[in-house]
Length: 111
Image 1 (tube, rainbow, N blue to C red):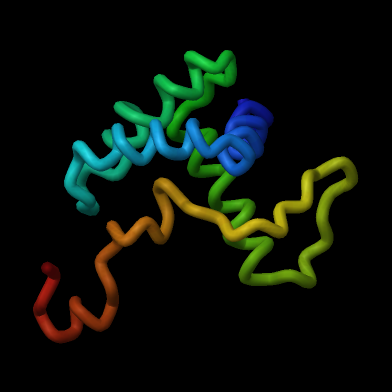
Image 2 (cartoon, helix red, strand yellow):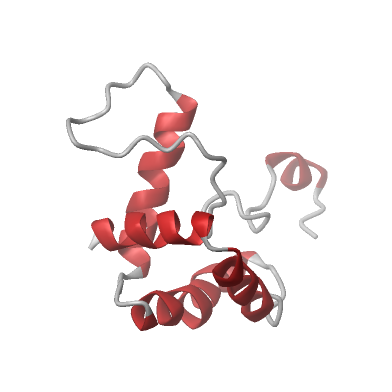
């Protein structure tokens, strides 16, 4: 449920110990385009489920896409009851440093 993604990230932003735990587990994986979903499945989803906030990669992507669109187009109306997230967002699937840059592709340097 996308609501669980929202609740998880509210908790994540408020709880330093949770952020440190996620960071420690995430650091065991190299950042790359090929494994970004696998890292989310191996790190983020189990921790969220432990906290009683299970969600899927598909729900995580939907949440991140909605936040990214809102941040890119602040004039887009927010649906009634939709939380407003003024905090900087750390994306797991989008813009996580794991996407191939167009500049690198043009120069033939993917890594």
